Amino acid sequence: MATDVSSRENAKVFLGFDFSTQQAKAILVTNDLKVIQEIAVKFDTELPEFKTDGGVHVHDDHVTVTAPTAMWVKAFDMLLEKMKSENVPFEKIAAVSGSGQQHGSVYWKIGAQHLLNNLNPESSMHSQLKDVFSVGDSPIWMDASTTQLCRDLEEKVGGKQRLTDITGSCGYERMTGNQIAKIYQTNREAYLNTERISLVSSFVASLCVGDYAPIDESDGSGMNLLNIHTREWAAECLTACAPDLADKLGSVVPSKQIIGSVSPYLVQRYGFAQDCQVIAFTGDNPASLAGLTPSAGDVMVSLGTSDTIFLWLSSPKPSTVGHVFVNPIESTDFMALACFKNGSLTRERIRNECAEGSWDKFIAALENTPMGNNGNIGIYFYVTEIQPLVQGVFRFNSHGEEVTSFPKEVEIRAVLEGQMVARRYYSEMLGFNFNSTNTRVIATGGASTNPAILQVIADVFNAPVYTKDVANSAALGSAFRAKHGWLGPGVDYSEVVSGLKQPPCVAVPSPGADKVYGDLCDRYKELEARIQNRTSLISTD
Image (cartoon, rainbow, N blue to C red):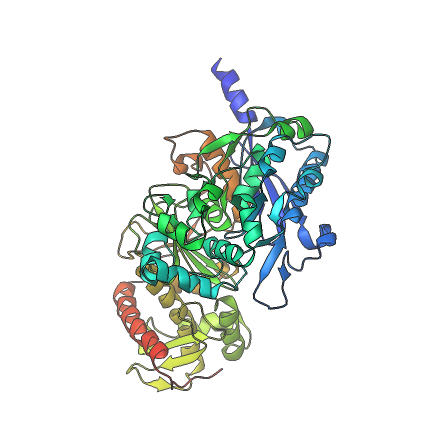
């Protein structure tokens, strides 16, 4: 009998969706989390009738950015049809979860729920749902048209820091609450005709369950509307944005909660099992965290065109820089995020200028300079940084004096140390403690193959560095989360992913690094404040 149970268990597969800015993707994994199929629909090329560029429409004012909601529905149809043509074993799928680009919002018009509940399996979803949206073009994360509404929200709740303390973020243009406020103020009729507002994540979940799906706590904490401590909508934020907003948003649920079974439409049209469960969908950043399979206290560093820091925190310090979300895989904890525009392109620029475009020469020069760079610090913002909001290149010698240039080998170490010290500094501002003996750094992204960069990270963060190359981490994390939710309450995420290959340790802190970089972080903080506060610094491009 035990063998039969085990056999049935091993036959189960789990499905993860990801609706990102440019494509919709599905990943299918086995019970032991091995990827068996990947299928994608690219918006620009496979849905040309919507005339998107990079999956979006940039409006004439250059700050309003939207995506056609109906395009996402049609992409869902196409994704399922592709899966069918590739013989995906729908009947073996035990659970489904997914993710969507954070901050995007969908507006269902009055009466839409009835249509969603009664889809005809003989017709596509798109043909039946294309006209059920009160706002046809969904605002997305790239939209920057709500600056004044952000300031209004902050003022109404008692200031920027108070809004941050409540929701985990100060007012950001892309945050959904401010986008909703814009629609209420500029398109009142559409707002009043709205029955439910979904995030992109809960919108796709709604297509799966055939009913309005709740917003999950993790994605919901990227809206400037959720109290991240109580995990409930913050009444004062709702009132500040628009009337009757709680009713339009519906409930908020833990990220691992089962929100229902797949719809009769999916059962009859594609052959899903009737008991296939749908786990709450979340945002793409929280889902990517799940895809990296971290543990409590980990730091995840994504090294790309922009560098992004993900932090697993138990006691965050919400800051007006960066964001604090509810943790998607441990709902009593938090996930903090900070993004830095000046990432790989900045490192490559210094490599080209100082090492003849060669990483080998870059590494050799780095190895000829000591930790701490003899007190020289460089701050390189070739494009306007997010935190601080500054552009320029700033160099300081060991006495804190501004200088116009460094020797090439000093410049090479300065760009790496300056970047990583900044990553550590902002992580500490959000509540992370780099003195913990349990800290691991998980590095991913293009630059995570460079041993010199990884060694600097280990030294600056005073923690061992592990590398993990995870393609399509949001869709993969969604598939893992599908199994996590399917296993039920009381199962720790670490148990779900325990059978996966552990990432290798590639760098450990050098002796004395903690003292060197502890001091350097203190100096960096002072120098960055000078850059922000003074108007006449020596700066070169």
